[in-house]
Length: 242
Ligand SMILES: Nc1ncnc2c1ncn2[C@@H]1O[C@H](COP(=O)(O)OP(=O)(O)OP(=O)(O)O)[C@@H](O)[C@H]1O
Image (tube, rainbow, N blue to C red; front, side, top):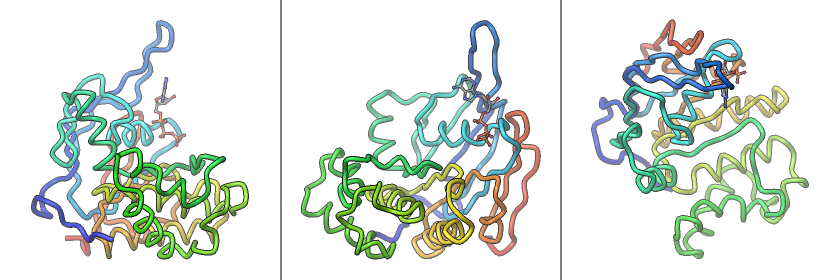
């Protein structure tokens, strides 16, 4: 397992947004997803995104993950200018820079836990032997070794989410994006998942962004961003992070 840092000072923003806007067209109606967000997020932060349903948390994560494109504004993540990037650059970016964790785990049902974890690295063309060895390291780290050959249907929700985090880590991303990662878990498993993300932040120096309605991640947050109607309306920082 690789301990970041990569290039760049820790003080540099790994995510920098200026006037970041995403509008959706529903028929003739324009729906505001994100409304001119400007924010800098430094390397090594654990950012908790808060806000009511529809406030723009998932929209922001999707833009940072390059799963979606902004309508206007600037967005730079780990040196990639995403609002201007070519599709080719975005493919590399998605593979190399971010790892995404979803509320519904998004594991492929016909693949085993190990195969699910390996998949993004195999799709990136990495050698199978090396990928399997790395996947097994993360699987051990997540205490999932006895479940390696199980299908997602044979795993508990907590095990599925830990497998999904291992999959998000397989390409060594600098930024981990988690969209309501505890939403389908009971409080005990939710806490385990949040503690894993916090450990990845602290010990492995990954920048972590968590969008959530839960307060479980609050004790680990170095920054809390509050969104309303597609805008950041408040920001709280832990002095311990600086
Ligand atoms: N594909 C889409 N088409 C149209 N409108 C969308 C689309 N995706 C999001 N929106 C709208 O953009 C706004 C922000 O949605 P977003 O999903 O980012 O909110 P959220 O804060 O993540 O909400 P939740 O907490 O419920 O997940 C909402 O008004 C939503 O209805």
